[in-house]
Image (cartoon, rainbow, N blue to C red; front, side):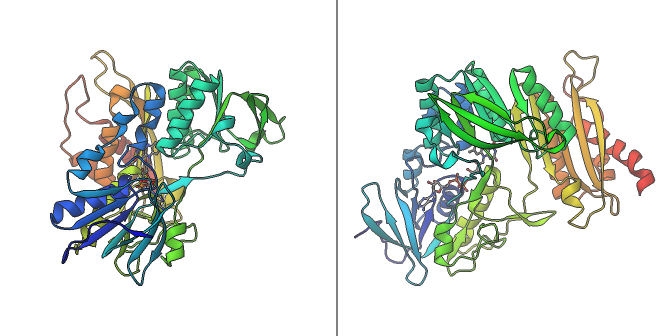
Length: 474
Ligand SMILES: Cc1cc2nc3c(=O)[nH]c(=O)nc-3n(C[C@H](O)[C@H](O)[C@H](O)COP(=O)(O)OP(=O)(O)OC[C@H]3O[C@@H](n4cnc5c(N)ncnc54)[C@H](O)[C@@H]3O)c2cc1C
């Protein structure tokens, strides 16, 4: 058994388990605050600080070299005097002695002592109950997608198997980004989704706009379709599915595909934390408080392994890179004695699907009602900029406000890439964070020039529409 890491007398030693958004953010913040602290980041794979959010753009070919997906190179991180232990898997945390036991690539066990620990082990892909899936893997053309190794495996399958058809199970944002990526390679794509609409983080009518965009780019979209079995069929895979919802009772479906991608969400990767006695939620996320403290002495947590404090909903689970970065920064600061609190996520999200962008922030009716709000949602359309200037396109908005207080609760938008819906959503996120009423949107001094907008921005016009249509309900 070896003992790794330098030990400097009198210095705080911070160990981060996880070398992605959460763990690296914690380490970087700690280094900003304390130039003398010993900081060690250990990660199970060989890809410290990679932007896994960029994987679809590597697979599409937009990013030619996977190395370019690194937010920072290994050398950049080490230049900050942060020790990186790659290919090193933490196996056990001994809370009493403040030690982590880990194994490296050779299988040799090491112990690493800590004064403060940040757990940022992230998430693992959810495994839906699909018969045969657990017997298949990349060698058969069956893929999950979460890590750089997964990305390499997909690229290998694309090159080696030359699939002319890929089936994607799951129409969340990763499934749709991958549909676009594979179409860019000239491969036929089917997307199979159990729910009635693609991109279920949006209301159905907006999901339908996204589905139309997918279809227009040659993606076969099958919603209300539950994949229940995948089996090898020669060099291909046979995907079996049954229709649900209003299509229930229709004939089962069988698709042949050279490759299958299963992207149906993630679950927190917390076996290590659980064994150490870290309190978890019923769904297995670390129950960190707003200071990212776990309740165990000197142990903090951040990222996809942690429950999400939501500014409107309380506790939920929304695994996103944006949140992991923020939580990691707070965990790193507090591990060195800080007192910063995570103010809460709003689930703000954006995704590009071919020529469209879909974005959302805040909450929708089905989330607002159980949380005690009295939501009203208005659907609104407007041009992204003055129609007399060439190139104006339609922005579709769904705005949700609370009928009792008038507070803005959520906004969803779908528009073209140049319509900048993501930045309009960011304005909405800022307004929700500030607790603004829908009527206060008019007070915001937003920018205007005819090629880019209107004197009343789309968000403000949607607010005015919400106020007029909700009047009879208030
Ligand atoms: C294809 C794709 C696209 C995405 N796009 C977006 C996007 O556009 N916007 C957005 O906000 N989010 C996006 N996300 C989500 C975002 O990437 C994650 O929320 C974020 O990476 C979570 O960071 P994390 O550090 O918590 O965990 P992870 O990225 O899951 O990293 C976990 C780290 O822990 C390490 N680890 C795990 N167990 C151990 C152990 N026992 N010992 C040592 N190390 C361990 C792993 O090696 C890894 O370094 C995307 C995700 C994917 C997969």
